[in-house]
Length: 278
View (cartoon, rainbow, N blue to C red):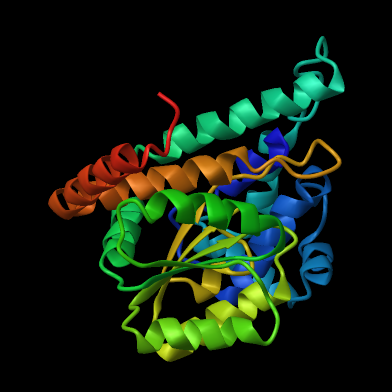
C-alpha cells in the first residue's frame, strides 16, 4: 500500500461503514492515485454501486457531498507517490515503505480499545481456533506456536479443503467461543466462507487483515488492520506479524496469573528436557 493509499485509508478510521460503503472505501484505497479525479458516477462504476450510494458515502464521512470529498482526496494524494526516497534503490524503497507501515501501526496503537476487546475474547476461548490459509498460513502457525505457551488449547487451522469446516465444528463442540482469523490479500474465498460459518455457529471473530475495508471486515466482530507491503514481487507481512504479536501480548495482559503459571511450567519442562542449547 503506497503512501497516498494509506492517507486515504485514514479518512475511514473509526467510521462505521455499511457493506456498500466498505466497497466504495476499498475502491478509493485501491485506486487512490486516480480516484481523486473521477466523478461520483465513475467511482460508482468501478465499485459496482449506485451513484447515490457514493454521495451518501461522502455524507457519512462528514462532507457535504462527493465533490467535497474529492477535493480532500486530491490534497491527500497529490504528490504522495512522488520522489520520496528517490536516492534509494527499489529494494531499499520497499523496506522504507514497511518502516512507514510500522510507524502508522504505532500511531494506531495509541487507541487500544479494539486490541483489548479482541484479547479478552480470545484468551477466554477454550479451545482457541486460529485460521490462516495460503499466504496467512505461516503467520497463523507463528502466532499459534507462541500462543500455545500461554493458552491451554490453540488449534491452528492452516489447511483448506473439506476438513476445514469439520475442524471448526470440532472446536465449537469442544467449547470455543471465539476465533482469530488472519486474512491477507488476495483474500482466499475459503477464509471468508470459514469466517461466515464461524459466525453462524455463534463464535466471535477477531480478524487481522490488511485494512479496515478488507472484504472480511464486515463479517468480523473486531478488526485489527495492519498494512501489507506491496513493492516486491510477493507481499511483505511485517505489519500483520507485528499486530499478531501485539495481540498476543494483550492476551497475556488480560489474564496475567494463569499466563505466568503456564510460562513458568513451560520453562521448567524445557529445562528438564534440555530442549534449548545453553
